[in-house]
Image 1 (cartoon, rainbow, N blue to C red):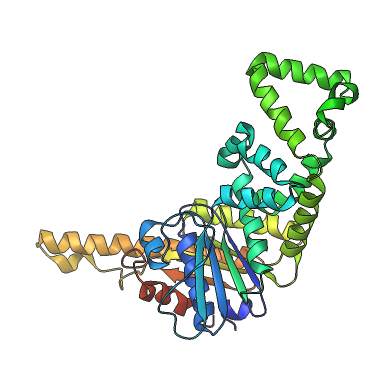
Image 2 (image 1 turned 45 degrees about the horizontal axis):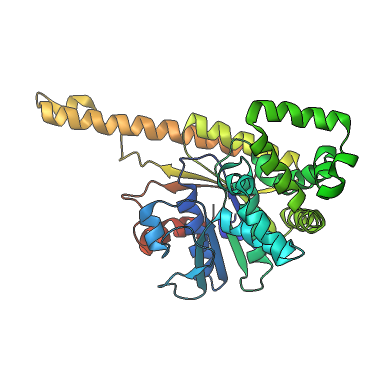
Amino acid sequence: MTSVLGALDGATVVVCCGPGGVGKTTVSAALALALAEGGQRVCVLTVDPARRLADVLGLRGPTDEPSVVPGVADGRLSALMLNASSTFDRLVARYATTPAQAEAILANRIYQAMTASLGGTQEYMAMERLYELSSSGDYDVVVVDTPPTRNALSLLDAPRRLTALFEHRLFRALLMPTRTYLKVVSIATRRVLSTISAAAGAELVADAVDFLQAFTGMEEGFTERANAMGALLADDHTAYVIVTAPRADAVEEARFFAGQLTGAGRRVNAVLINRLHDDLGGPLDPDLAGSDPTLGAQIAAVNRLHDGAVAERALMHSVLSDLDAGVVVALPMLAKPAGDLSALATLGECLCSEV
């Protein structure tokens, strides 16, 4: 028998992943609180928390720096909300060869649009911020609430995809200095650019070329960083927790996530099934209502809740039998949204209990 915290013993990084809409951010915060209450220095990196939870953690919006959460008894809990744009800006400043190069990239419209909306940017920056925090030496454990994604590997492969981009022939050609650009770009590449220009406009293509060429000399630093991030995600001290809910679609997502993680050589340390309903002691005999319609409606409501709770537990047992996880734990449906540390501590108690 072990607890969730026992399954995470020795972990310096905890990656919480899973589908959206299952309370993953709240569970990540509760897990971080439980670790901190155990005497560790913990930082939780959240992605777009609900307003109540943000208030509990002392977050006033996307911020680049962790804030200490008051009211933690033994250890220390800090929290921050992912700001992908600021994280990317900091990377550019770190690897630019001159201040002018950094300014040219930060002012480029393609770069600004990419950091705001390009698919995969948020996942990559979540991993980058995780790496920064874990390598800072300020924390014993960093818990990251990952962006919701159907494909777990889109998150774990974010560092590798960046290096693949830098290795692409078209990208490498566009990285050449402007004065030699027309000499080194092949006829095929120029045809591609002409086609894009016709469809999107020459000004947009010029911005894209300027953006890519501004990266000259920086790709090596980005590649080294991406490789270091990949090594962190594969490290034995990095633990993976899948958060799901007792619904058929969410359980199927959990199975999918677990398969992808194990297929990538990652061990699933724990599966947390959040928002499990209590059965309220049903079922009740409908005849107990007699001719009282109000009591009859109440009994019917209790029995519906009981049937739902039984179905949820059947799904939970299917997770127990199907998934190769260190521990599977059910977390109760909170009476109200997490609005203070005591609500998070209620979930934390379940994480500390042996199963």
